Image (cartoon, rainbow, N blue to C red):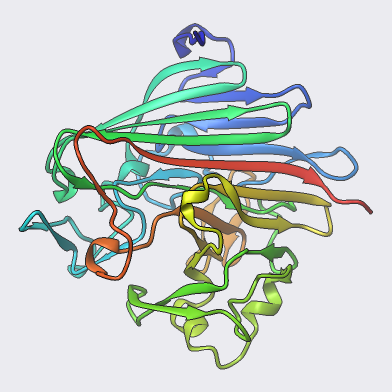
Length: 351
């Protein structure tokens, strides 16, 4: 049986933070607030370490505001149209921000909560959150755990599991803002992005899914081969780019979710040589190019974060699925276990 220890007795647990490490010297900092990946130190092709995720400064003093940096998102990731949904013949009205939309679980989503430490070891940490019946308007009590593990293949494992006491809806995701050149290094326009996905979900003017699935061929959204992010974002006349001010869309992976954990994305920074491969067991990924970062948020380095200072790759189920009849169901029943398994593998290119 695996041995876990309370975080309070471990030297590498400091206040609201835990630092994980592997044999190669990679480090992952996990925050109690939002069960977030607050820092991720990875070497470049010359062996120089840098933190490659955007993070708050100082993380432990963050008590308000929602930038979602590295956080665990729930109970339902993304935007929910009409701020409500039908389930079991009953309409559930959700807490909202603008009166029309619920975003990332509501105004007090899982990213804004202090999760409970269940156990910590040198290379792993487990946290739990209990969301009561009626939380943000969602039915049923939901118990969520997340396991972080940093192994010696330079892979960070992030595994979510959730159970409920009555029928509810669940679509969790993990929300790191990646900049492989280093946190605070500027725009990620020169990064190369690959997505093994030939279809994406279109958005309306409110950034809500229309329910329409589009082919990415000959568009700004075709990343089936490695593509410079800045080149894609500079495509003129693409209405979907204009609606979102960049990328903020859901790509449907070509390999079906039933195939288990498989390739979901690759991110490559040619300057540093760092490469990130994302794998997942989810149907697709939401990709966000940091369009709403406006310089008002000061990062861990003390530098402000501006638009396109990072890119998010969020493995999850289809967005707004409860209001889109053609999308796969995200209902969780009592006795069943929801899972979302994500792998981030770091490597270096060959000069």
